[in-house]
View 1 (cartoon, rainbow over the protein chains, first blue to last red):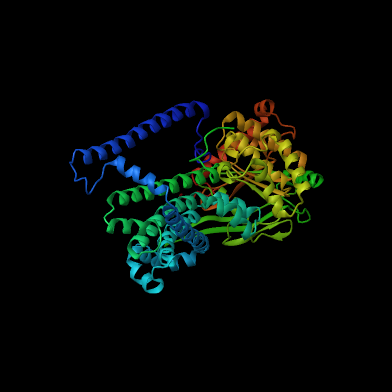
View 2: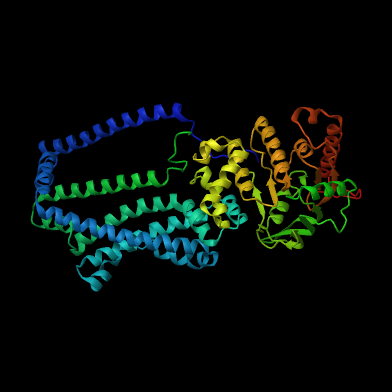
Length: 277
Length: 289
């Protein structure tokens, strides 16, 4: 009965110092790991353990990436990919959050939609490729549709969990002070669900990028994915790898950005907050 | 506020009966509460009737599982009654009523971690429609009253448990309720902090003239704080005894707690709670729990 109250509080500077040292050495180890992977790839190719026609040496791939970054076409394709990804993700976030809050707040709607959501969610978005090709051809709208479909579920399901996870004491507090429904939504439900929204955003951002690239590669929607397809079919193996690495770096940037957003908006959350006053 | 009538009510309870013309701040009339679960019904409260006069400080004790929290939630309008009614200032309670504030045991969950201390206290005042300047003044006054003015811009989780509960009390005080409900507010803080907070509640109560209903499982705390102690039976809950606490109004952790009368009252309430645990019902009948 007594232990229920305070959430665990990290006890400040003492706990902070070793953590920082660990993350610093973690960074060094991580960098060494990347270097090791690149060296391995280089050696596999140079020593002809893997046919260099299929896997060019890593140094050549990076040299080619450097060349690509000097070309306007690469930046156009990158912009097209990022635009499609961002638009799709934004739409998915809007749908997921609004639908999640509404469905999650109304028990009837939640029960009413639960089975449908569980049925639609596992359908792989790529299975819809024939459908979007019929509807939109190779226009960017094809990719955006796939992105929206795939990413919305990630957000929606997280928001549903988030709305269900509102602390009953916080809810009682709001009710006993007679907060209006709108104020409860803004000051209690939304902040409570925010950690879930942020997690949904991170998952959705990754899935959205996958679907955007897939649509470009398979359907031929303009963007980095299509560039990869063209490079591959014209036998430019090194360039294919270089573009794949570029897409990988884009994914990394997306994840780092999502983490930064998380840290900012959840500064009060036990998973983020660190110091005591 | 209603300090004069508080004295009146005090005298009335000495004789354990409130006359009809004494207007109660809170009137609990044959309240019943039965929880209906899937294929299982639990009768939590069988029948409770009592009145709390304006400006009184009443403590409610009972064995664990006696439905103390259920009763409090019924009075707060957070839980629907199965029978009877709760009347606050002459109006029946159907939902959370005007002029009532609740301090919960779980301060860490009742305060919003995403807001600062000031924002937490300010929020109910915004809902009340107070202007910016008035809100600022009310928050400052409430924080000063609990001695936390310098922590206004901290987040609740940066404060100790006792300080967090002070913030929750400040939030309730700033709301200016006529009735303040407290649900085992100090169950999760250490003994020294608890003594400080008890004195804080006594002094705020005396200064503001607010009616306080204080639910606790701690018998000493109930006798030390209250003008009356309502002892509840075990489930299904009825009122076992309404004990008038005839200790002097000026109370002090050291002298009050060592006064012979305190010991007698404490002993009496203790015996009642022990009897309640064993299934004692009013009128002497024992019901198997």
